[in-house]
Image 1 (tube, helix red, strand yellow):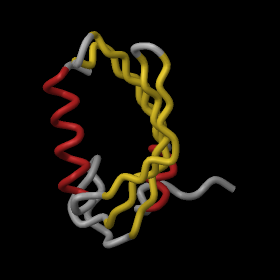
Image 2 (cartoon, helix red, strand yellow):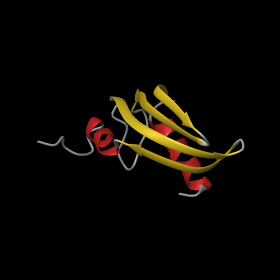
Image 3 (cartoon, helix red, strand yellow):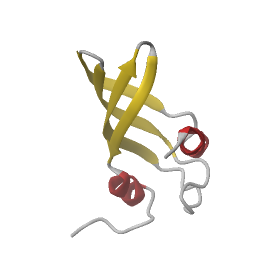
Image 4 (cartoon, one colour):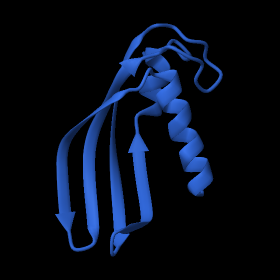
Length: 96
């Protein structure tokens, strides 16, 4: 995603989950790279990815790796349990 798409995605997350909270479990630095393991929590208060608000509390674990050049992020890799999130809001059934 480009910068505009990333901003749009995070604006949608913040709207859909009522200003979610981020808990950083680990923050690791090596050279110009930072890795952050996190859990985002919130309540599903607005539509997200076509799913109407359910009022469900959610917990979304993930990890982000940032590469810096000076004080600017030049690369970003992020992985989060989006399937788990969709299960929590009832969009898909839980795996058997």
